[in-house]
Image 1 (spheres, rainbow, N blue to C red):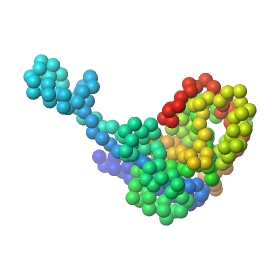
Image 2: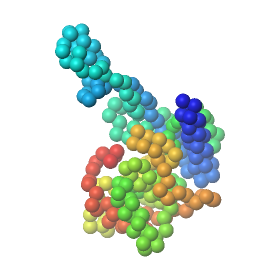
Image 3: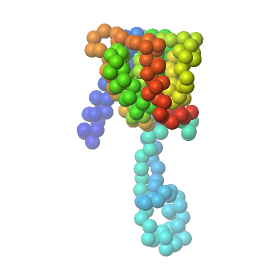
Image 4: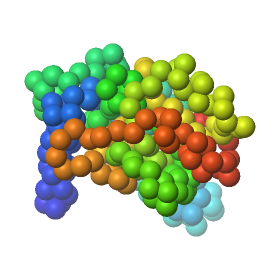
Length: 248
């Protein structure tokens, strides 16, 4: 238990420190994400069930209830937002909303002092933007960039997706670039004006965020243009299944 508490304190300290770095040093607007909450549920050993159904069967004295072991408690990590079908649990703004994202260190410190476990949500479009793609395609794309010597900025990785940070771009600019492609997979997504991504070391229901390509140790991270990366990202995503769910 002591080890768990120590690890939790370190994580909270890392979240606050990272949020301050992003906002104060790099001038990236951030806001706390919805975060997760733990809910206790009941599941029978070997089959799904509920404590209610188990007690009912016991009261009836059925043979099945005497032979089946009782249900056991299990924990579920759910989004703290009110949507029961949230497709990105913990990994989105809620209260405050995305428009509250700021670079003010005083506000950032207040937020993460009061909500030390909150994910760090970066509002994209003004100082930094992003392009994201499924993790297997992301690994192929990074290898392709390395082969031809194309420089990259920071790359964020979740268990399912890679997010390449780029310079801000307009919808018109993005539209012109995509119009030059023969086909654009829907698994490739764009985080520009009005969008957001979650930054390390945040934790969401999908897993922990990490740096696949970490930012430089000193100074504000350099960012490539969307034009320099989009063609390779489209090609790397060509074999990935299309999907409309943001959680994919």
